[in-house]
Image 1 (cartoon, rainbow, N blue to C red):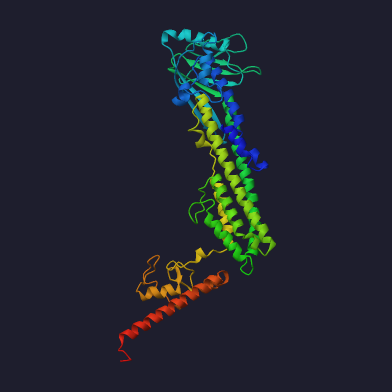
Image 2 (cartoon, rainbow, N blue to C red; image 1 turned 90 degrees about the horizontal axis):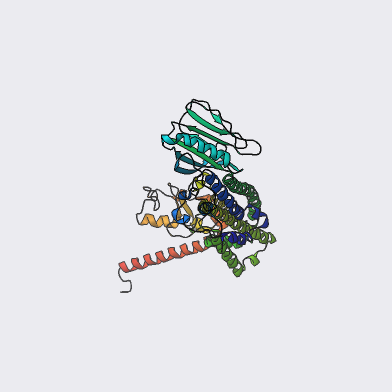
Length: 493
């Protein structure tokens, strides 16, 4: 499937109001044809072959897939059109294509041709040929060409208009030909000196300028849309966060259901591959597939049906919508990035002007920063509202930190684990190896605020952990009694 058709197909998945912010790939593709035509006309009138050697050699030999013509094929066809070739005063030595960026941030594509002057005995013929070129074969109406010499001149110029018969003023040592511009014709300025080694020709194609202006306009319009959407998105998250804090209160019956939903959401790794990593590492398709799988899992468990508060069901739907919009935004950015890459590649292939290495350095489409920021907002302002037990585990036993004891190095462990470590003469912190941090710990190190927090949000887990510890203590005491009995004399005998 051609990329133009692919964009049309994928665009149907986006909200209708988002579709205008897609890069108009087909329109830009049509503009490339105008660039090729203008490029060919310009270089044909200058009697210089279009810059086919500037493109990739492999691409230059390929035919265009859409049946269009490139600068190379037009140049070949024009040579057989029966038009007599016009001699230009010099031999082209170098043709360069650059995309410049001005102080206002606007880009300007420029073609620069360096032409070596002919031998001295051909100087008189040179000026005659230049005048004939300008008078007989004017440039296309939409082309502006400026010819400049690298040398300096201190004599009076020669002036000639392309729309009127030639009228010249001759100087002693050097000649300058300037074609005046009126409302019906283009301007051409030529400066040549008899002692100059080369002439520099600067060509600015208006069709090429229009192509990049349109492409940048699409990109800028996309950025403005992203800014507006981000503002609206954050407003929606703030509103949803307030509602979520209400329905997920530990005093509400829906709290445990929400804990399970967000635990499954984190485990689903909708947008990231590493647990706890909010860097966007999934494509739009991958994220959409994982989120749909998560939603189906929630439905299969019947968690939504367990809500007691009707507001919870509404909040869950709003949470789904935010994730769907995140998928759409990621898809929109990916499509625009791919459209930009492909249209620049087609521009280079059809015109043989190399822009693919220059344009990305001037204008870029960031497909990660915004969506990564939106994802971070979801995790911190929504998912983070409901505490998860994995954030309060003891690093030693990997269970909830029963009677959490905070060492002087700020690491938290179960009081039971600290006692065991001390009995085994493990006096340094098991995490950071802080010297004697375990040895100096006492009952005063118990984090009372954290203990109250865990009892409030994880009452079931705290009770289970307390039962396990009591069972562990009973087993240790029983073992000590058995060892003590075996070490003494037999009381029966």
